Structures are given as structure tokens and as C-alpha cells.
Image (cartoon, rainbow, N blue to C red; front, side, top):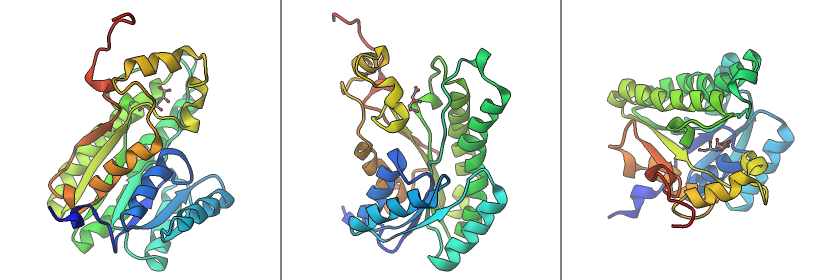
Length: 263
Ligand code: GCO
């Protein structure tokens, strides 16, 4: 099998929310496979600059752009600027997301809207201008970062699960409409990973920490680097006939009902 199936040399990959956490890990994997990285963040230029420096220190060509994926005009202008300054976007990784851990009965409508706007609508807003260009050029790759919560509910993450469940179906809808244009749209569903986002539920002694470890067949939290291979596969020629699929990278947690503690 040709190793070129998993190479991205000459390709440009835009990763949203790539200044830290899982987005940074996936972007680094794409860069190590040869892609030129376009790093998006929305919080600060300083954070973007630091991330770009980190990628460049790994020998990865990278540039950074500050914009909020929920702002359609900012997204349109940024895509135009990126494609003028860096070049056409071949791979889009829709990773930017927020989470709010609040029981549904206590959650404000504003908090609900913020989660759904960023985690679901933001993917729609980001994908439109990028995919129009991909179709004009004969094809491309879109990877939507779903979640275990695309399949399962959990107390206090109702808005996030609703958004990520919707993102699974948006992924399938995008695949349906854009497959005929040689645009493959797939998802990655991370399980439980050791990042800043899960730090509050991973602290030593937190009941959730031990439970997740016992509930996951791999017996551990994921390390962000565990996602690099899935990102490269779905961005590379190796996945040219894969469309509408959500690839779960979860240590097996979705495969099992679990087992009694003393079994
Ligand atoms: C939580 C976690 C999850 C994970 C991830 C699982 O509070 O349950 O934060 O949402 O972060 O999304 O795929």
C-alpha cells in the first residue's frame, strides 16, 4: 500500500479552535503528515501567535487567523483573506466548540444558544464558504469534531449533547449533498480525553475520574495525540471513499455496557 495514501504534502488544512487541546493535537498530526496549517482561534491574537510558533517549532508551516465561527460575515471575509494569502483550503476541520455543564432545568436560554450557536451552527457557517471553493476546485475534505455525546446523554451537558448529536446528522447531510462533488465529509468522535475542557471532572478524587477509567475498556483517559491518526486518515486520500462516517476514538467506551466493579 502506498504511504502517499496518508500524506498531505501540498495540502492546506484550516483547523478551527486549534490554539489548544484536541484541535491543536489534530492540527499537529495533519502538519506532521505534510499539510500547511491555517490555525484559527477566537479568543486572542497572542494565543494564536503562540500556537503558530509551537507548530513552526515542529517544522510545520503554519499561519494564524483570529475570527469567531459564529460570525458569518467575519467567516466569509476570513476565508477570502486566507485563500488570497495562503491558498485554497483543501481540508477543513470544524473543531471549535464550547461546553456548559448545567442541568437543563437550570440552564438559561442564552447559555443554551451559545453552545448550539458555536458547536452546531458555527460548523454550518464555517463550511459554506470553504466548501463552495472546494467544489469549484474539484473536491476537498471536511472533518467535523463530534463527541461521545453525539451518541449518549449525560447529566448537565444537555445543550452540548444536543449540538453534537445534531452535528452527527449535519455531517451525514453534508456528505449527502457534497459527495457528488468529491467532497468527503466525516466526523471524529473523541471519547474522554485529558484536556483543559475535562480538567474539572478529572481531578484526583473526582467520582467521574475513576468511573470513566473503569467504564473505558482501554482503562485510561485519552491523550490528545491519540487523535492524530484519525485526523490524518480522514484528511488524506486513504479516505476518498469514506463519507458520512463518524469515527469514534474513545478507547472502546461506546462499545460496552461496562462491567460490575468487582468483576
Ligand atoms: C463531559 C465531557 C465530554 C467530553 C467529550 C466526550 O462533560 O461529559 O466534557 O463532553 O469532553 O465531549 O466526547
